[in-house]
Image 1 (cartoon, rainbow, N blue to C red):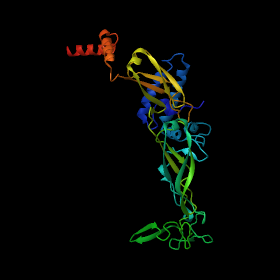
Image 2 (cartoon, rainbow, N blue to C red):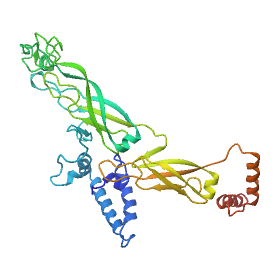
Image 3 (spheres, rainbow, N blue to C red):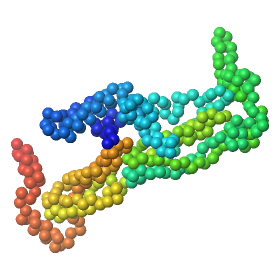
Image 4 (cartoon, rainbow, N blue to C red):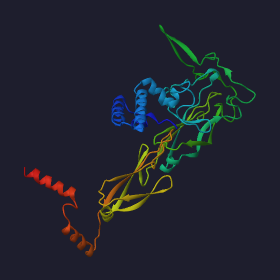
Length: 374
């Protein structure tokens, strides 16, 4: 059985600070402590899981490793390749690299021979809550720069090749003396590439790249959350003069649902019922995201705001076998546009009602009366 996510275990978000972690740990530890649950093996196991999660996340270095590699950071060889994120088609994974800078900003882009790393690309994708629940494989079309197939990325006409820049002698930088100081700047002739092209390729005009729209397959895992970033490694712009390609980042947003609101792995659905159903009791069916229907039984005398939990009918938890719950929130609808007969019946009911029929309102107004009378 897959290990539960440490953040889910403590009931906190991935951005929780040290104070929030400590508060959540104390709350969970008190709830599942063996002294409070004598003989309860499941509570004891939960207590161990809570303790393990807190011991990992309270340590900054351990937390950084966990955020990057998941549980694999502490299993058989530590920070190996089988950890955090997910894989799709050999090149797709969730971008959680806390040690790098966003969108490749900290990487060295220029290399020898005028080669440069290609730029990173961003693609915004909107999916439905149903798609986030079940997961999907999406096909997207992305306009990007690819290596020119005529010059194979060199920028020079076939049969020729770039030449070493005569100004900087291939270094891409030139020095200029100003008084006591020597200032180094980008070579104005080759623009830092260290090479010049005297006979450029007719297709890419010396750039080594051409713009083209490509079709890519993106694996969206079940349970993915709004705001998640997915990285397609090497699927960004082609590098300049044979340099490495950049990455493509998919920014996911989940569309609001007509019936359900999401809170982590749990779903909430507000269901209006009639006043008579609330008073006399009844049943109704609710469609769930797994394509089935669940029947909810409303007991006699149900009050507004009452919640019913449908266990395991929420969202799957990413990278685990856990599933959240669906909470049905009851809203009692007051009758409108009453007929004459309906009014008579309601008035008659009010006349024969006692305090036992409405204990909360009777008690409230009794206490208020005592308050104002001192």
